[in-house]
Length: 337
Image (tube, rainbow, N blue to C red; front, side, top):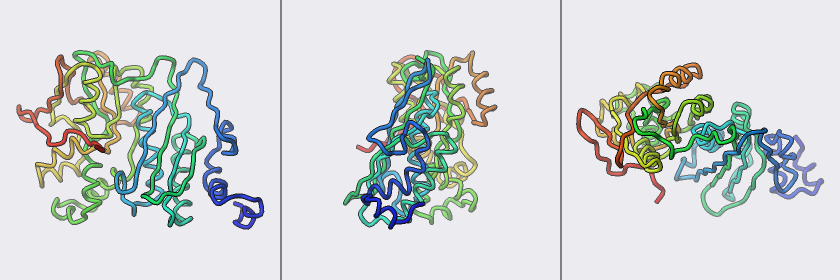
């Protein structure tokens, strides 16, 4: 790594020195040109479409300012990878725009880049370019990710079919509970959580687990899908509205972690938070009944848990049924507005 003096002698500005030192090593793809140009070039494989998504995080809104910088970087990238996974896309690269408060220490930037590099390697999703700025406001990070799918193969949210099975990956509600714990550690005692259960819930908030290993199987079997970022209740409602259909969900079939079940035994009202709180970064999908077995087998082979939770129906709206009663939610979906 070049020294500060070497960088200064080479006539680099402060921004250029940060890029040269921390972000250029992450731009390993030839079409990123070592971050030395105004733009990158991206050519999809023959017969493939590009899938584009963008998402951002802001300190105090999506994460706490004291969260570890490595985790913030990985979460910001994984949020976008989750969108690509739900569309059946293979990651191809991403653009990063970061606005740093003026008092940001260089050690923080180094740790952020280190975390980003870990996931770049793990998901084979290289940095292609971006922008760095100072801001008088809170830390802000925006990522635009690119993926590829065979031509016409993107899994949409508007293509669910009447009678489809509704399924979700992983477990629901852990991250929403983890946020509460992260803000009030005394909750762990009130909920009678073991240290392992507490750590599990907080880790699910801090570090999403995007289901990219399931992308090929979704393209082969699912009729519609989207990632669960704003809560299962709200995101499934979005999918149903886009498809012009309704849904019915068996709440007892919604997959919960052991830690979430302990929380519910302490406070049954938190089922509302679990179903609507957001930050799950799982996939909710619809699949014809005849294909569900094949999809479940593919998910098992990919190491991705998959649970059947309901059915697509005619009409409008989504009903969450528990012991024969329809649940009502004060706030059915996370919203910034």
